[in-house]
Length: 72
Image (tube, rainbow, N blue to C red):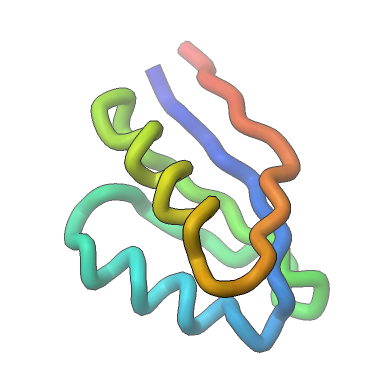
């Protein structure tokens, strides 16, 4: 099962989000799909999805969770 989390951040915070997630080590793969609009995709494992969402929700700037979904 693949988990996907789509978020929107201020484009100036994209590098910071990447840096923070890398610091936690191997929680999720990340793609920036629209840098101008700050749209990012996260691909956590089923075991790390909740932790990734908790991290995103507790960053010191607004992170809009656009959608989360799982696919088989």
